[in-house]
Length: 130
Image (cartoon, rainbow, N blue to C red; front, side):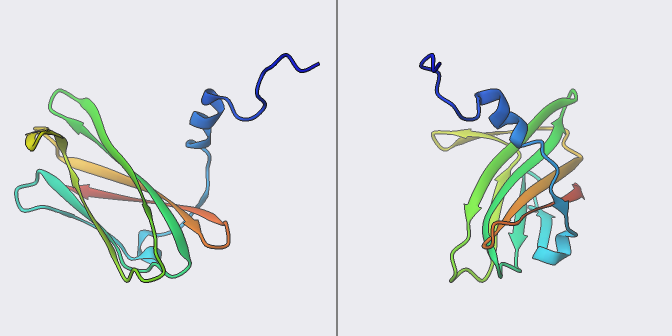
């Protein structure tokens, strides 16, 4: 008997998908580099080996002053014409062109989920000390 409930993943199940384990690859396999911006208020993520990659989902996490967990999430759809992807990930928040940067950040960790054009999903992780 169908009680009007929509079948499919619930919100809880969707959140758990994020925590699944995927085959881990070395960051160098996708040409992933992380560099601190000169003022250390942002991190530059670059990926230079895009062949066979359709999508990249990423999460940058870090602890701000007072051991407050903070992070930046996003995704990049890779076009066949892309040679390299570069994103500046701010360590803080911006609203109406006014930015408030997090203080006391000493290390960041980037976890990237890579979806290949054949449907294979890989994962990589890279840390950077600021």
